[in-house]
Image (cartoon, rainbow, N blue to C red; front, side):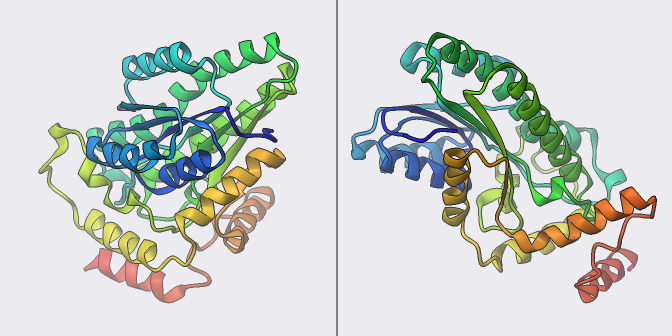
Length: 300
């Protein structure tokens, strides 16, 4: 848990938009030193132009979080400039849709590279730095937040690659929490599981690797993208609302962070099926029309 934020360092991936940018705004308001990380240079430049005039100490790096070498260079730069970060937000992510067998090898590598390996790199590089800082100062406090999704707790159809990546992030972060508890009381961990919130993730194709640009899109992928666009656009909870909840979790040492607590009913149904040995429940039980729409579209 971090009780006081002023003068402390925050590393935020995916800082050019969505949750990352909103958390950066809060961090700047609270007087933190910022390390802004994004793969999209124009979005990163815009975030710097907004936040730098506030007088905060700031370091900005264009980084592909799936790349181990680029992440190592980032960690080295943070260590050299600010020392161990107090708050690490492994937030960069991309969206994906489509029937699970229709996703190409490139689809799998891209989504897992950003959504999972980006978090892995953030954890494996920054946690040792934070532990070293904690060992040298009994008053030092830090916290790591990894962005997963409600798709990491349930298994909506036609979103297989994304589901897999986010379930892995939940498992990784739960294990991180338990592992940290074995060795220190000075560093906490949380997992962010948002539902449909208006962020840039619905337009992840803008950051597809060059080799994937212009690749054929299947019918299921088009349908899934259209449904995702509609759901995200109709969301009532803002990215700023979610960012505020992230900082509450960091300050209060809460592990699970949700944007839509009411969506947990689907998680409860899934857990009941697992414990009871039943089949996976109908994910559209409360919205049967949506399920029928998807089924009919895929069977045309």
